[in-house]
Length: 459
Image 1: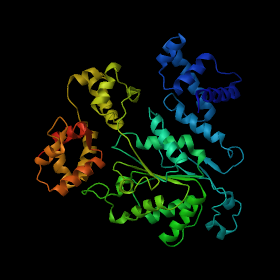
Image 2: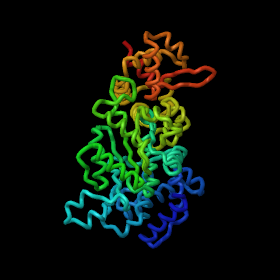
Image 3: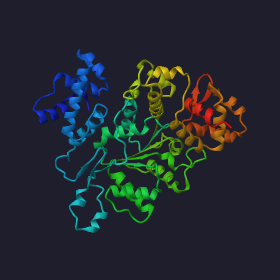
Image 4: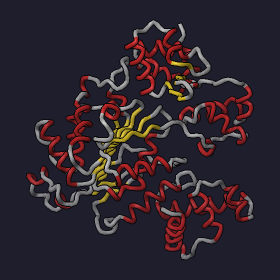
């Protein structure tokens, strides 16, 4: 949506409710909120007081809450408005009574099935050449705030709609906004797909159960064997433009071994991802993971339709808005200290509010990279998942405050060449070690993880 479309859409809703159009300040609040501007910025632009803009905004959010029958406020205005706009723009919005709408999803049941309730045998069939429309985003998060990932959104759009990339990996350390990015992409492009299904592998299930689940969403009775179910699914993927998202992929990998090694119960996923790239169809699978998906690296991207998008932290002061923090001039320094990691910054913001009354300057004056209890628990889980070889490399790397060469790193370890190389590669696949290209190639452990290892993992 453009800014003009946003203002016109809100103006239309307000006029239908009150008989009055938005005044200049109301329109400014809508436009400014859409552009992620603060009330103070809007007030300066229109030469009014910040308190007046705040009052206008508060009244407007209350009015929109009454119109839309859900709680609207400045922080969720953008995501809610886009969702409502696209739902109301759907050609089925006024004519199909069988659409169920919720905060995160809507599901359009096939009229072929609904119109034949007395033919039980027909419920297991679907004509994949007719238009199917099924959306299941029940497990997808609601995006309230979205920051500075327009370039990444453009990449996803280009890969899917222009290059027809069938398998896409969005990966990076926790707290880099992987899930939020993908959900934002869906919110903006939902109507371009016949089928959109979001599944989390936080508690993974064998591939056969996943495929059966996907077929049920598409109103097709799963057949007896996995081979036949895959044939059913790929018929749909070939005849309809579908988007399937698998979040938390790292949970199907073995703990205590190198990154990307599949657990026995989930080895069929490896073949499934290969099939996604090798078989001809018009659909797409996005996997979201804290570890690189091995298929993304092993397949030749010049021959196979695959792409990898790796996310790092975001260095934007907007991510600290509405955290109750003071000393805005120091926010970027705080963000830099915690490598732009959303989750770590949220955790440390709570600590600053409780112990430093929100004074970021006082917190930074301690000159210590503090590890909160929540961060400690998260890093402990990550460390426990590492292989023995990786742990040895991590413990040695944590002794250095500057990046070091591969040879210098290897000299301090009692590992074979094979174990050393596999371990170093695996740590990069987990986004714990960064390779720095300079005059020589250097390696460095994540600064926050380094602090954790120094304080909690030494013998």
